[in-house]
Length: 433
Image (tube, rainbow, N blue to C red; front, side, top):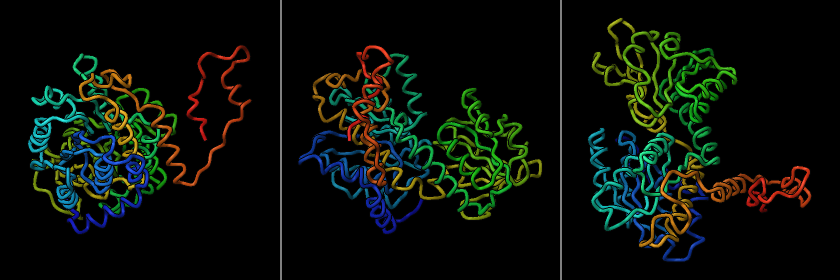
């Protein structure tokens, strides 16, 4: 677990609250006791000041919450202490390792819930198999990560996903704010704080060219780095190539790299063979979900690390080269900086809160999960009306206005030069002022 302490956390929570008007304002549209009154929400999320603002909003909607850390290595002690003091909120934390994480997830799952917020799908899957399911059937869930959504799709294909799950990462507003711009900025912030590295002219390898990887690569490129992408997806590699970036296998790319940033959500991206082939003095940073993308355990076994700067440790390899590891291989923007700016999480968490209202406010506890709203068991994209609402609110907050299509334009978009189509080609909700 990591800093800040509670006093600093309180200041940062107040700052986050000011910069998260979308989330903070949601309860104001619903009279007491709130549409989620009586609902229990189980959440496996990063415990940050921004999460406190989401918890406050869900409490304002009437829900009770049970929380554990999606990544115990980046848990902020002061934030956890503050959450524990909130009425209607329980925080379960284990030791800051895989065993402690699994224990905490199991503790949350054992007591059941009505709704779930998850980062990685572990809690959703554990709750589905938990002993409390018969007494408190799950209504639905929100999954924040691409990795978690993929895991749930696998469960769906196997016939073992029994609830509707909204994949928050499929929200266009979330991808833009959180994955592309939030990750790009916060990861570079962490790298610069930790290394004080001049990026101009350096070779920076980014593993993964999903939305997060694109955000990181664009920021590195803007600061003058020569960016190389590693990928396993032909489509993502093609996109990187067409964006003018070099694309190479990691075994080749790491030989020239001054900096390597992993952003895949998978494991074993940089392993022993890569490390032994790496350039002397290469800096490694993980921007993925857990500390398994870079084989930090092998580095630690190769010899004792030497602190170079706060959050940066040098390891001497058997071949005489040194490798510098940022934040012990933990998620660098959370472990070595302050994560996404609150304005970014405002969009993501507003989407989560509205999706939970969609799932939990109007579904009878005794009814089949999601049936009243037409959401069968399975992984679903964020409903278009929610995505559009969040995007519009974010634009209003930014002072951005939109044109409104004329009647002639609406008619034109419904036709192809012949009869009017039975189904509009665009969502009419997008035209509302």
